[in-house]
Length: 121
Figure (tube, rainbow, N blue to C red):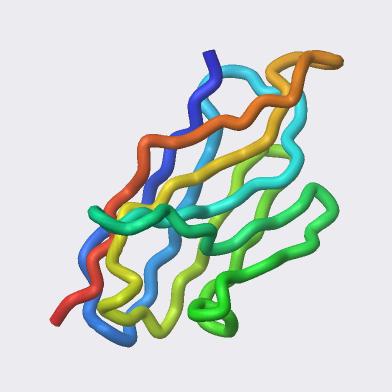
């Protein structure tokens, strides 16, 4: 059973920084696009950033220039560096990856449990 595990959330003041990390427990043969989403109670989950296996990135307009997504293909990990944080960035951040659990196996979507990020003074 493959699971993604996030770490790095917490409480930070406006203008501060946090770095989120996500790795897989269990074996993964290969990963494709990896993403960070965020969820606020009562609101739709939104895609914050994505990165392909080749390193192409996309960002939500409101985080462009403040957040940076990166990955380590050898370790099947993805990070999200968040700078100049704002109160409206407060959410549960979830890691998502399209991956094969074994060579030539199906590509499935895997999710982490989420990590809370709170931006408040």
